[in-house]
Length: 165
Image (cartoon, rainbow, N blue to C red; front, side, top):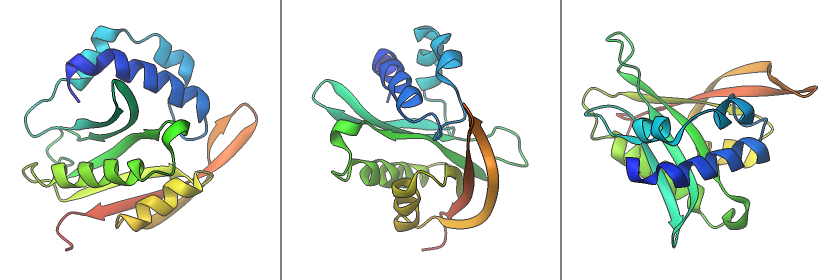
């Protein structure tokens, strides 16, 4: 995705935060304060840095996944898969898998990147299955990691090593 997709991303991000509050650390009220210009800046690709992949149905953005890569020298060998979401209308069609596969493939072009980690709410069972099917391995479990309106969910911590194949 590019800066030109900021409005579409803003719309889908609002949807995902309301539809799946236990799946994301960010709350919808905080995100609502972000301007389109801030999102544009976020989607502007920087060399050897993170990026966002989008899935489109015509003119409608129906899914996203992003790679966040730390800039600190001791941590830039790793990155994080974040903001994975496919709108309800098209779930079950393999879009999520294609998004993750596209992210993994594009990640191979980033110099010095060795692993991609993620944190997933264990209540998101289909997401957990997807990540395992794509080659992520669970290395940790964090009980009651996220709390939203009286409900807790655990986190599964997973990693994918780019050089394991």
